[in-house]
Structures are given as C-alpha cells and as structure tokens.
Image (tube, rainbow, N blue to C red; front, top):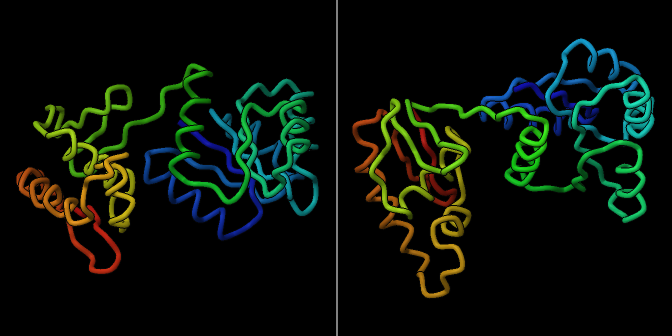
Length: 219
C-alpha cells in the first residue's frame, strides 16, 4: 500500500515516513504544493496525507486542483487549522477525513486504514521476527501459526509490534493491557511482560526493559 505524504515540515516528514514504513507502507514524500499534483499522478497512491500550510500553494488549492483533474484517491488532511469552519471547508473541497495537529500516530494509522478499506485496499500486515498481527481479528501469528497467548499477553504484544525496535512507554502498554480496569495496579504490567517474554523465547524476538522509558521489541 502506498501513501503520498504532502508535508513541508522536515521533522514531521521524517516522523510520519518512518512510522508508516515500520508498519509496512510505501511512503512517497513531497514538500511543495506546486509539485504535489505531479507526484500524485506519478506515484498513484492509495491514500494521500495532505498538510494545508504548504510554503507555495495552499493545501486546499492542491486538493481542489486534484479533484478537478479527476484524482479520486482518498485524502486525509493534517493541519493545525482546527476550527469547525476549516474542517467543513476541507471536506467540501474534496477531503475524505480531517485530523488536526497534534495527533496520535495510532489514530492516524487507524484512519488511513479505514480510508484504504473504504477504497477497497487492504492495509499490509508487516512481520517482525516472523510475528504478524491479523488486522481483522487481532490474532497474532508466528511463521504462519497462531500463537497461544492470553488476551493480556496478546494486547501487550500488539502494542509492541506497532513500534518494533522502539521504546513504548510503560503507561501506554498498561492502558492497552488493562483498559478501564481501575483495580489493576501499575506493577501488574510487569507480570504480563514476564509471561510474554517466556512465550517469545522461541521466536527470536526479545522483549527488552528500558528503565525509565518502558519496553521495546527487538530481533
């Protein structure tokens, strides 16, 4: 699945490109509105992420021209313009979704996948050390075989597989493993980590503790 990212901020470009590439997407980057339509036509993307505040041509003008030229690719607008009027204008110009900055990367990926499904494209299921999450069921497979995991172990592993090789905060993983459980103590996540670490022993993936940062999955 290919994304076209039209964004002029170098930091945002790098962050989004790396994030989606880790999830198995191809990412084409364009930082200028004046070149965006040419890149759009050349790359034939499945979804376009479009910033509005471009340095030369406003993102809304890029979108309007794209629709006039018959480009039907789903477009998700990313922008600091967050008023209701801005959202309505963007949607009326031809956008399919709108996400104001700052945003959560997990929410952004979920919205991209929703647009891809709507357009009839299946988002990829990237593998890490032979581990893969089934997008439809949430089940986790190793080398094509389903893993025998408890619901909490599976929730923890899904959270780590979303960012392999990167630290995931302990607090974030706690929310994924114990959603809405007010009785769970913060230390309970360590028990699930211990159990999952044993489950991963034969896979080649290592669950590493980073003091003060959280946990990461590495090969």
